[in-house]
Length: 521
Image (cartoon, rainbow, N blue to C red; front, side, top):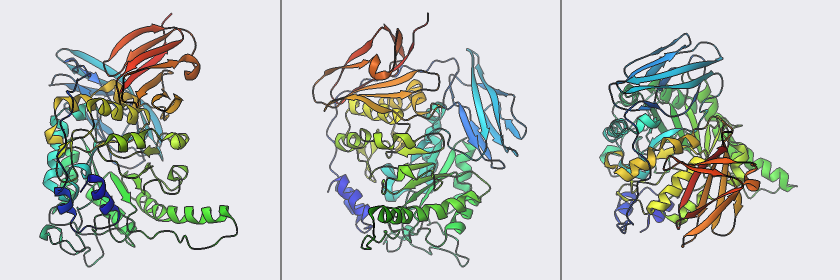
């Protein structure tokens, strides 16, 4: 049975035999040797990650300054707005802001080898997730085998691996933290709710407050999963008719992110007849919006910020109305698998959704499929090294939420290089929040461009074919003129100055990712 079949069973809400199906996944074939393009981070401090952060008035504030370099390191932030404090040893900024406003802060990281300084803007208002969320999700790794212990170990590994120093923040628990409707696994059996109607975690998660507190103690944020229907995709208890109660519980536990997966929620009635196609579309769109409006209203009442991630596979062109129902991000596609066909088929078809992305609301083409994945039975990703470079480059150009799906305790140097390149990640975390679109293409050769906050452009040259090819990005297509400096973002080195175009030979299924900006006079 293939991984696609397993995911199909999940979508059909067929939890029985799920773990048995996972066991049937064939081992992955050996991949070509992987070249690590990302240079090692310098021993002197370097501050990474987003340059802007959104928080609502009165919500708990948690931001850990992401900085690479030898430890010990001392941090400072000046001037911090009233209500916030900094731990100079860990770089964690905590507290609460009572009133709306924008605050310009200078972050400083210092060790025995030098110091780094970076401008940082705190925006206290109605909008959070001003850059796409970055973190880890349990599904592509553990699937139905997730537990509190595995989640804590993942959080610890995110920090010990150094990935947290590059801006990776969220540790998100996907399905199977709740009790199951008919599983034979005793760890998944128990009451769905207590006498007052409060959701009851399964025995693998005996202390949800403790899990969130452990994650927060590492300077990270915690995420959770549910469904607007009575059951999740895997057959665990959902939030149907308990939305406000569940939102209150998630906030009391201390969670910062909610993935809300359609699954068993009722479908719009497609058998009804309407006088016009427009009336039918409005009815169906309203039906798709309704459960997300309910949960958003419940989350908005809570005294902490909870990023709201809509998961309904792109139905009804969700990108057109996801922000309207309070979504901070929304899936634009069905589930991804670790194949070139799946990843490229999703990633290169995101142009229609691009105009609807921006600070606080992001198109989500699903989680990352690099490293050791397997949905319950781990194997190395089936993507070749060049396909993995394409995957990360494209998702960053698309301003996509970046959620690692692999086992963080089994990271190799190649995967760490993929996930720890600060110049590549800066494309995703750019404050302007503009999603890239294709500006030049034929069947196999594509050029994608993304405008950046500093006036530069990030450009991806992609070869979807099976043979090496030369790809050219012309200044006319990029809306540029004059001499431009081109920098290779994966190798973090300047390639020179170019007058009218930039060309590169690109490996099969590979990418050359560059930043282009006017050359200094």
